[in-house]
Every structure is written in C-alpha cells, then in structure tokens.
Image 1 (cartoon, rainbow, N blue to C red):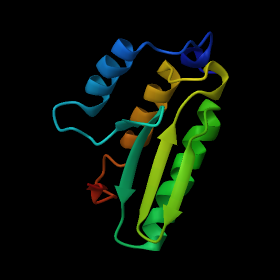
Image 2: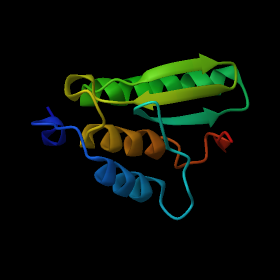
Image 3: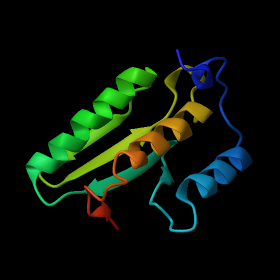
Image 4: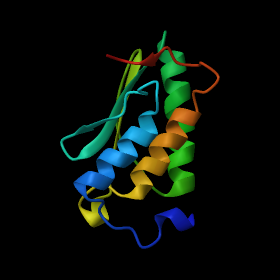
Length: 114
C-alpha cells in the first residue's frame, strides 16, 4: 500500500481549503468541495473517450486502493473522492484527485465542465 494512505485522518476545514487551493493551482483545475467530497466533472467529445478515461481512472483507483464515486454519461464523467473510513476528506483524496488530473495532461479531455 502507498504510504500516503496509511494512518489516515480526516482533515480540518482549514487543511481542506489549503489542499484544495494547491490542487487547483493557478489555473483553477475545477475540483470543488461539494457535500463532503472533492468533486470534479470532466467532459469529452464522445463516449469512447469518456470510457477510456473511466478505465484509466479505474486502474489508478485500484493501484491506490482508494475508489471514487463516478457518474458517467456520453460525454462526461463526474468524479467524487472522500474517505469513508475517516468519515471525511483525507490526504488520500487529494493525492488521488491529482493522479486523476495527471491522466489528462496530454489534453485527452476538453477540460472541466463549468
């Protein structure tokens, strides 16, 4: 198991805001805190590319043993991370959110939905 996922604790509100600012960076990548989870919607030009993203995301989630909730449709996928065993948001959620963003560094998606 990746050491980042060991001895997890729920982050405080201040820690979450700090981590969210770092995750989104100067370009505001689109991660938001919604109903106790980190959430971002990715858009794609077609179903094939949406499913390619979902399959790559599934590989990352299994590798990290930290699985998001997904809502998948023709040209979009909404990803939600929270840590159920700490009943909140942990460093694992931010680590995995950054890993998901890294999947698209080659421009495979059209970017976050508004």
